[in-house]
Amino acid sequence: MPDIVVYPDSPSFIDGAANFIVDIADQSIAERGRFVIALSGGSTPRPIYARLASADYRDRVEWDKVHVFFGDERCVPPDDARSNYRMTYEALLDHVPLPTDQIHRIRGEIDPAQAALIYEQELQQLFRTAAIPVFDLICLGLGDNGHTASLFPGTASLREKERWIVPQYVEVMTTWRVTFTAPLINAARHCAFLVEGAGKAEMSQRVLEGPYQPDVLPAQLIQPVNGELHWLVDAPAAAKLHFK
Ligand code: 6PG
Image (tube, rainbow, N blue to C red; front, side, top):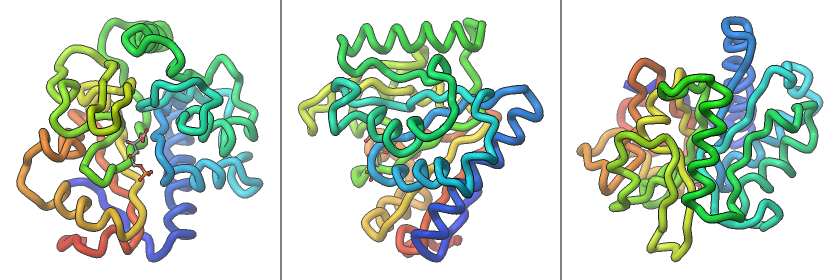
């Protein structure tokens, strides 16, 4: 069973998520001397990233020991308004003393297959292993259609067993994405869904309590092999859950 934490409102959800990330950072740095995190995109995490960059939080993280990756990216240039990198840069990365060579962005502006390969090589270089990398924390969102990262319903990337990062054409959005695969996500020490708003209540209930149908609800694929699964949700998003 995932560890589900329900926050009464948006401010406590944002603070709760920021505290959660700081706690895992502290733990990871204490145990391994560094914190390797993959950030989620979309709109939900922006205020959480901004909170982490605020005076209340930024001095609580040893940023020189942090490596930031992205769980997925839209295949657009880094200055494009749809870029997850741009959103994260504006909300967090531009405001904290994180060495630039420890910001590992997906090159959304180049060929998606090439971008995926380059990102896998970057992981091999950092983790110095051909074995599947073990992130300290992978943050995830929940799409209205049950997707997470860029693992969309009915797409080939859902059946990937070997690759860590793949390009994925998303028919419903007529666009390319580059995404972490379920095997890479499920190798992490901590996976955390950050889910906010009444609009996510039904999908949260279906993913957490409904029948297992990952081809329809890809978020159900996220079941860490040796790690912990966390759901940080606000009360409106948790409104339809039975076991909270
Ligand atoms: C992306 C994300 C995606 C996102 C969900 C939820 O690039 O869009 O990584 O998986 O997390 O779509 O998005 P919202 O937070 O905007 O609802």
